[in-house]
Amino acid sequence: MNKYLERIKNFFREDFSEVTGIYYDGFKIYLAHRTKKFETETIGWELYLDSENSYQEQLAEKIFMVLNQRGWQKSKVGLCLREGDAITFRQNFENVPENEIDSAVKTWATSQAGKNAPYTFTEIDGEIWAETLSKTVVKEYISAWKKNSINLCALTVMPDFSEKDSSDNLDRAVFVAKIILEKKSPNLLAEKISDWNVKKISLTAAAVIFFILSGFCGKIFFDYKVAENELDAAKKFLSAESETLVLKKSLDADVAEMKEINSLLFGQRENFSKLNVLIKLGKISGGAVHLKKINATENFVQLEGLAENSGAIEKYLSRLKNSFAADVKLENTSATDGGEINFIVRLFFESK
Image (cartoon, rainbow, N blue to C red; front, side, top):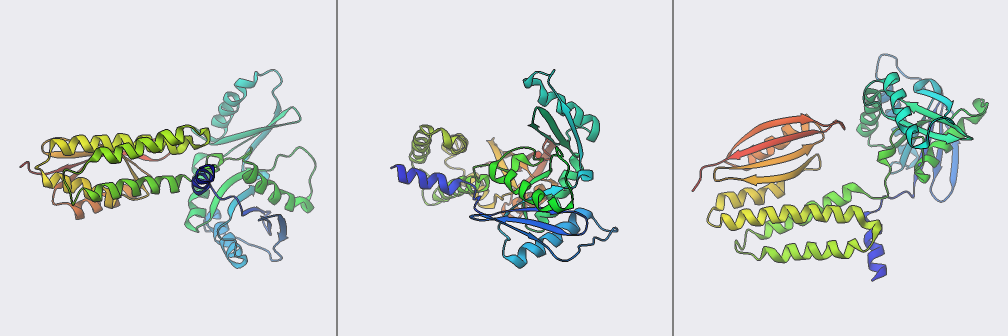
């Protein structure tokens, strides 16, 4: 049983077996690649960027070429910024209570880089080293590297607590690689380093819902309670292990959504059009759109969800319109602090 549980955990864990730390000094790229041990390398050619194009996109393209040449495309990558590429400060906080340091650094970051600016800090020898960048610039880095299929997990400046010269540029590449491996600060992208692979968890949950909904086609009076009991049993099994908290929460959400669907189906046994709507919803869900709630009345089904961006909503509406004869209407949208978009969609159809 313990081996089986460990295999489940390992399946949903992130893979940190290959990590690459990168530092670009304006002329050369310095790499620190780690599989079983660290291997450092300095690229022997100078890298010049075109000032007329986006710095982040050009750098990401060059880095992708280097990773591709060496077969390191699947690495989790960290970029160590030059001191002038981010806003930093170093200060003694001995008169500030430990539980107030985060708030003080956040206030500083807001004053330097604007509202909701990402920030990070670490303590070294009794002093605080803090970093921040505007939210827009951080998003540009993330977007450019994602566009080039690079898994960027860390963005930081190496704390300047000692005199360093150009010969230490490889140290900066090693430093950012260790930030990922040890999951430590400072890292402006700390939320991207997790023991759990959220994408795998989401896809697995979506697949479970899809297969359950698909089964409704052959038997309208299917015993939905069986599926609920299986999810409940899995939840109870996982609750005994504190390390599987993320999986437990995911299963809780699936159980709640299943109960909503059950209630709807038992109240609408003769309404085959509404049943088909629910079945198709499971088939057209995408990774960029996550449904949070499904409500239904006599004449419409209302979907509440979360999308990565407005483009994802447009694609989702298009899939809905192509899949249903019903009238599909976007009722409302609102942005979240994290840059995602809440939305409400209604599917209108004639009652029977």
